[in-house]
Image 1 (cartoon, helix red, strand yellow):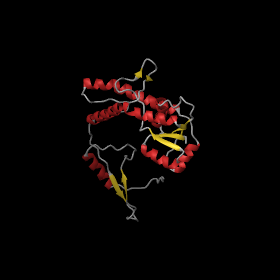
Image 2 (cartoon, one colour):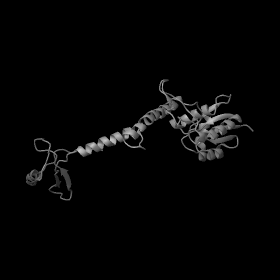
Image 3 (cartoon, helix red, strand yellow):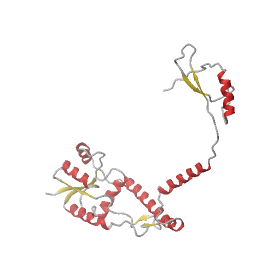
Length: 251
């Protein structure tokens, strides 16, 4: 009997879908990406609009071959990779690596966010085509990673130390850490004091509360830089009479 071919990323998800979808479906796992930029070269043609030059890694050739063989016996294909840009790109790479679009088979993209019977059945009732916006977003990220890492990492080996690496996110994050560390090292600590007063209504001493002194009577912001000044202000506060001027209620 001709079956509908479903392709997911992980073997565990493949087993679960097999149980839910039944005998009319054959479920295969791609084990993640089946194509990538080559490890031995840049793999990006900078002179041709940064066109990527994908290859099928040696360890993935068997997977691609098995998927291609399964597709030749199927009545239709459902790409059920993860619902993000990586998953969308994996579906697109599967189509190209295994030549799934060379025949006359209908190719559907199905997306679900939970592995339940209800979610999966709903997804298979409303398939769509591959979202090339998501695919291109993933390709742009991958190409940037390669351009930054492939070009800068060897420079780090020469100038700093072998084994170091650079990356699109990694390098920026390290820069932020370095900048923050320099701020910390250049920071000059300054002495400052804060004063709080414990207050209570005259007739209800049990209703005590604390108030921080933030400004002088004329509205000048309080900036206490030494103990002598703090003691002087405390002396004045101990002689003062306190009045609740306004009450603000916030939620």
